Length: 420
Image (tube, rainbow, N blue to C red; front, top):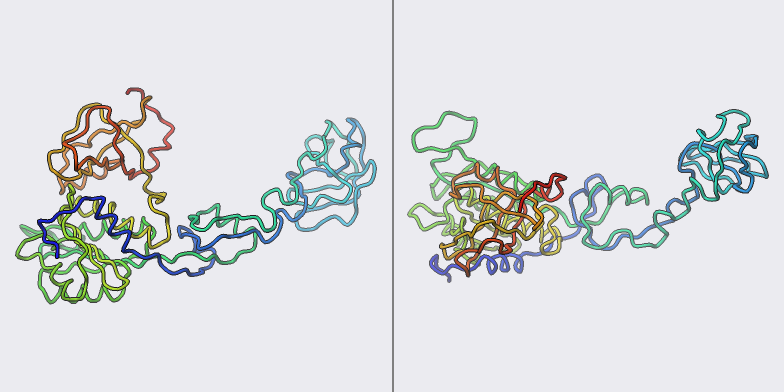
């Protein structure tokens, strides 16, 4: 069995997580509950959409061959949306039509009302109109039998709208993973409960992990922080392992006398996959499995816990949800560069917190400042994690480095600062 001294590379650790994590079974929730989930199987159009030619605006349906400026057209019927006209259009005739209304037989164009003398029993045409003008063709959106959404598509508002337009009241999707998070440590105090005594800290980790799991798309619950008492830890672990697909703890996985989490897990039948990674921040990470449950024991330092969640737990959640590897829309990857050389003398991959600036050369990364694993404020300033090492002692100025973008909106920001 691996000891803490046998550290593995970040890439190897992530590979073990993904290879040992199953894709969850498909469910079919109501359409209103499918947002953020991943489609299971291809989805095809049930009918042409639109089913019939219809008007793109309010106006009059007529024959383009009759559309002479100055001509007066009698209005023989009307066609509001959902109520087709009962009469067709003959030579020199028109039907009042509203947006979405079915184009009546004989008509091949719609003239907007503002290009006529106005509503009434008849109107004068003020401008010419060509055949097909302002007419939405049958099947213009999708054709019956056409592939609308492919297996693995992320369901967002547009996908829901398309499925609803075809009458789908539910969608087959991979279900949300159930994630349970909690922290360990006698020094932890529930935020808002009381003032701190010397040596105590508020439990920020479990709230951070709760938010991260929810942001990743999981269904998540938080257990109150456990003390360093073995019985309390064992009870919390056992309860979590019975109710979750993924259990995430912070603290208690290093080599200290009171770091009891790992031993408790082994006693509860969790198989150790790895313990210790060549990573800064985040060296003492434990990963294990018990049947269908995945367990992540993350470090107690706040930044280490949150960074390790991004690097290992979030990909596991994405895998369970059926996302393809590296296709998490919330965590795009991009190449960045530094204006000055960056050292890495840790012998580990450095997940460096950086801000990003768009330049003529690409995305320029800059350290947000001190990189200590307890500096939570540094994450509020970080746009991305620049992955440096471990096989190198740093990167030269201008050398491309892969970065995991924590704030995808920065990549689409309209502002492009000068420089570079």
